[in-house]
Length: 216
Image (cartoon, rainbow, N blue to C red; front, side, top):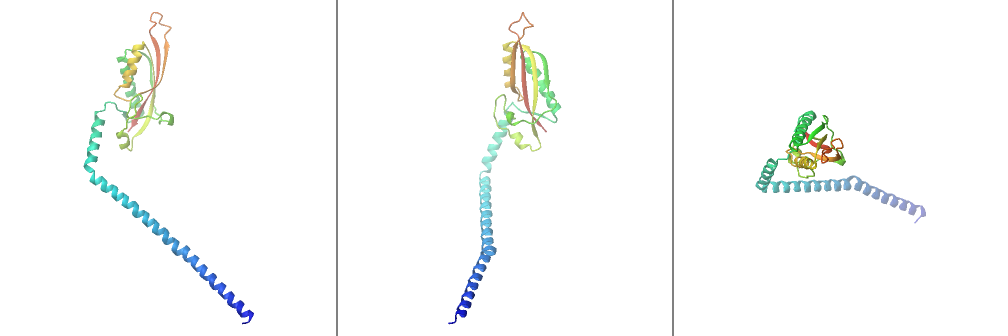
């Protein structure tokens, strides 16, 4: 067989193999891989729908138990006397907080010399997150806050300065811990009142407070 004829046959074989490889690569790229991706996405969708269907079936099957638990939580919430301040604006919340602090001071027999409540509230920072359902140091869940999408939680600061003895200070802190509205005590400064020489047991106290407020 002539050499040129063998070379031509070899070249045609190489070209034919190259065409087959190219066609196979194109088929894999534009046919097989899209089909596999589509099949996987379809299987994922089916799996997600199956999980959702199972979850809904479980909710339907346990509907009575869920309703009973929800009713029990609502009753517990309604029986809880400690609630977060709710107001339509920060000034209204400030007025309510001022009345609460004044009543607690009067009940504790404090002589109030300064009671300032901010008329504008700021959102809680990461270092002073507020729990809208607990008291001083409390951490209880609040269903009302999560249920209200339009309500926003802000922190309302206040400063209270007064003359009292140690018994009055303890009574004030107890009143705040069990007040009908949530109030946090951030700082307490106690100084002996040098002006009242005849009453060495009298103290000058300053409290930095804040109250979580739900602005509706």
